[in-house]
Figure 1 (cartoon, rainbow, N blue to C red):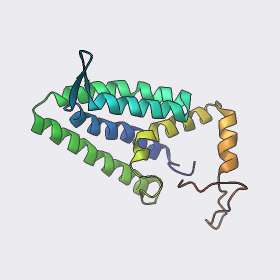
Figure 2: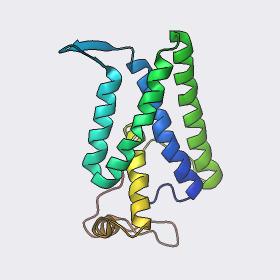
Figure 3: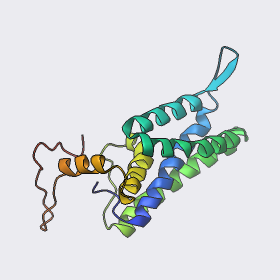
Length: 173
C-alpha cells in the first residue's frame, strides 16, 4: 500500500506493466510449437501465466488487468511479424522507455528512487492488479480486503520510522 502514492506515478506504473509484458511477448512469439494442430508460442504461455497469476491474486482486479492484456498481446503479435531486427529493436526500445518513465515518475512525482528490493521484475507483471485493486478500494469496493490489508500494514510514524502492526509480515516478502 505505501507504493505509488502519486496519481501520475500510478498511471505510469499501470502503463509500465503492460509495456513490460509487450516487450517480452514480441520475442516470445518467435518460439513456436505445434500442439494438436494448433500453433502455440512462448507468448501464449506468458500471457496465460500472467492472466492466471493476476486472477489468483484478486479476481476482480485480476480480470480487469487480464482483459487489458488482449490488446497488448495483439500489438506484440503484429510487431513480431516485422523483420526480426526491427521487431527486436522495437521491443528493446519499449522496455528502455518503460524503465525510464517508471524510474522518472518515482523521482519526479514521489521524490524517491525506484529500487527492485520489493520483489524485483516479478512484480512488473502484477503492478496492474495492485493498481486496479487500489482503484476498487477508491470506489468503495472490496472493503473486506481493504480492512485485511490495513490490519497487516506497518504504520508510519511522523518521524518516518515504521512500527510493525501486530502479526504483520514484512512488505518485502
